[in-house]
Image (tube, rainbow, N blue to C red; front, side, top):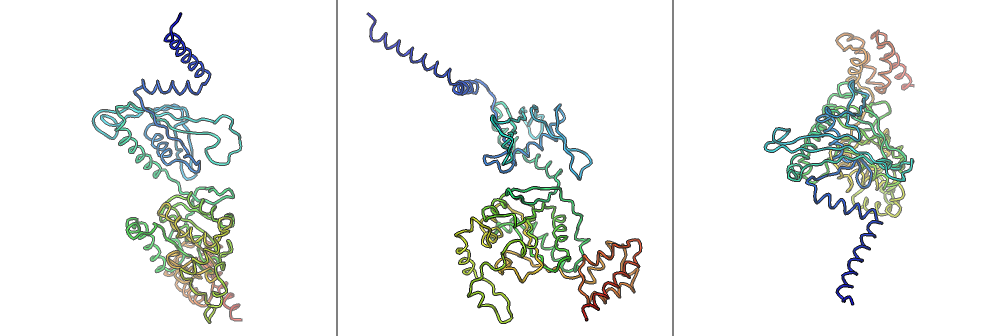
Length: 469
C-alpha cells in the first residue's frame, strides 16, 4: 500500500502540472515569464522614450531632442527618411523614419569621450493601439511613436551619465539651429494652433520717438540678461508691457518688432475663446519659454473693466473722476467674492493670477503684453506696476516718427526735401494723424516722393481745418 509520502509527492506533481496548465491558458503570464528569462539571460539594457507623456498634452522634450540628434548625426546610414520643408527654408529637413535602426558609438574612438567605445542601437517605432478610433481628442492618442535605445549593461553608467546628456545637448543645438519662430493662437478646444511667424517689423523701421524706442530696447536687453537676478530677488522671470494709444499708432507692429528683436515665439491669446479660469490656466501651462504672450484690445476682450468695483469704491472716486488704486486688501476681498464661480467662468481674478499669481512662475523668460485703445477703461488692478512693468504710450505721428516713415517708404530724409519736411513738421504739431494714416499717404506713389508729400500735406491741412471748425 502506497505511503502517505507517496501520495503527497503525487499531489505536489499534480499541483505543479495544473499550475503550468493554468499559466498556458494565460498568454500574458507566459509573455511575462519569457521576458523575465530573456532579461536575465540577455546582457543588454533597453530604455524606451515615448513621444508623449502620461497626460498626452505635449511632446516630450527628451523625444524631440533625440529626434533632432539622430536626424543630423546618424541619418547618413539610414535608408528611410522623412522630409519636411519649412516656409522659410530652401533646403528640406530630414528625419529618421519609423521602423528604422540606427547604430551610434560614444567614447573611445567614437564621439564625445575616451576609453572604451560604447555601441548603442536606436530603434524608431510607431504603434497603433488596438481598437483605436479615428476621432482624436488629444495628440498622441491615435498612434504612439517612441524611440528605444539598447546597449550592453557594462556601459550602463556611461550611457546614463554621459551619452544621453550628450544626445540631449546636441539635439537642442540642432533644434535651435533649425528653429522657426511661430505665431500661436488658442482654439476652442483649449489648445494652441500655430503658423510660421514671418512679420518683418524691426525697431529700425518702427515709427516712434527715438528716446522711447531706446528705453524699450534697453529694458528688453536687461530682461534677457537677468535670469540669475530674478532668481536672487525671488521673482518669476517675466516682464509685462502695456501698450496704449489710439488705433493705428503701431501697437501690433511694436509686438512684432519685440518678437524679432528677442527671437521669441508669439502667443496671441484670444480671451473671448476662453471659457473659464481653469481653461486660461491650462493654456498658460502649455506655453513655452522665450515667448511673448499677447492679449490685444484687452478692454474689448471680456468684461474686465469694472468687476471689482463695489459701491464704496465707486463713491471713493476723486473729484476729477479718476479711479483709485486698489489696495492689496481690496484685491484679496474682491478675489474671494469671485472664487465661488471663478472656476466656471473667466474672471478678473483669474487673469490677475495668470499675470503674476502662482501659475505665472511656471516656466520662465516670458513677456506679457496687453494692448488697449482706452487705458482709462481698464481696472487699475490689472495694469498696476509689478503686473505691467512698463507702460508705453503709442502716440499720434510726431515729426521724428514721420522721418522714419519717409525713409522706410520713400528712401528720403529732411536733407533732400528740407522745405517740404518743414511744412509737414508744422502740420504734425497741430494735427492728430496716426502713423498708419501717414504711411498710407506715403505708399500711394512711391516713385514720386514729392507727390506723396504734397498729398500728405493736403490731408494734414484738411484735418487741421476740420478740427478748427
